[in-house]
Image 1 (cartoon, one colour):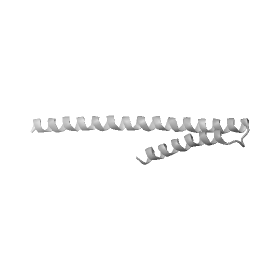
Image 2: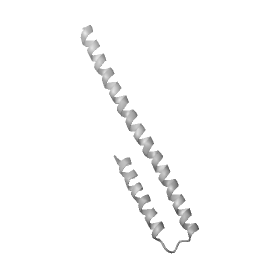
Image 3: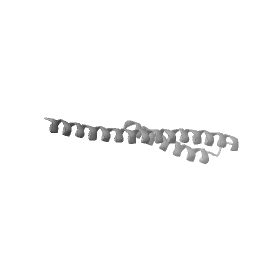
Image 4: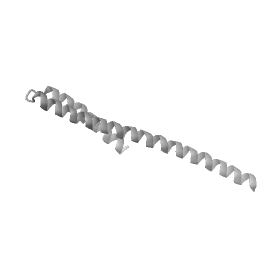
Length: 82
């Protein structure tokens, strides 16, 4: 849950930063482009982390389900053998 909360706050910071870059009248077009590119790269990096987090969560769910099924089969096998 902490990782998810951190990702949400980072996403908000990046979205807010895009607005601030566009609204700043003191930036030249080159500075604006550089900051936008930096924000884009950070957003992509965060997107990859979100995909990795989702994959790990899915793999954990599948593994836990498999272990529960295996446990149930072992218990049934043990009861039938006694």
